Image (cartoon, one colour):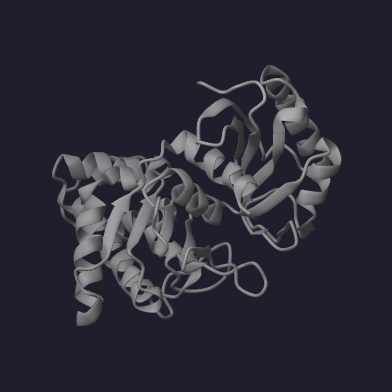
Length: 322
């Protein structure tokens, strides 16, 4: 990997609802060592931190000891950059406000920076990925939810309280689909996430009398991958699901473009694997909804960071920020 034994390194931690990924990263974005563990089995954050410490201490020793580590960066749902707390994260086992940065810095005796997972992805993209050299871009993560990080004038937008940039919770269809986690109706996340694709599939299947491979699928396991496999075979209903999803996403992206005029929108996460099935309708509907001054200016790019590394890279990039 070409690291010298004195070169400073950073720890990147990505906390997800199901699992947590962690790694040790050098200044140019090589993930030297990495691992993962379960988040959801830890009902108490203290036991989670104990296990994380056990895993990481082995990796720290492997790369020459704690003296080489500059700090720890963490990406987590509802992570607040200003206060270092995770606040009311609906998909984590720990409720309320968790002083995560303090708990980690006490345990490791290292400086800790925390932000939400999509902001971490945006910073990683700016430092190591498709957004290198860009001062204005929007990062959208399309996974089980829809996350976003907004960079304007080279700065990540945090807002006055540390929670800015929640495009996934903006309303795209007034009085639309109910979001289980927030209790709000018609948000982008309810439609353009992997969860949203599943719900769209179930809704359309109920209405449709047309022959479709999806009718044969087990409803319990009907997910975006099943829809994708059917669409690749030319299944009309599956193609309709992607078309509808792209329409909603394109509309939301048009609103975001008119708000901050980014150079590019970078898409990341599981749903991007559907390629043109999702990208084509998204681009078309974005352009269609833009006023003329913004048309044909904004690139939609799929992140080329390796998904398994991207979250760790993004979190570790926080350490190198000024």
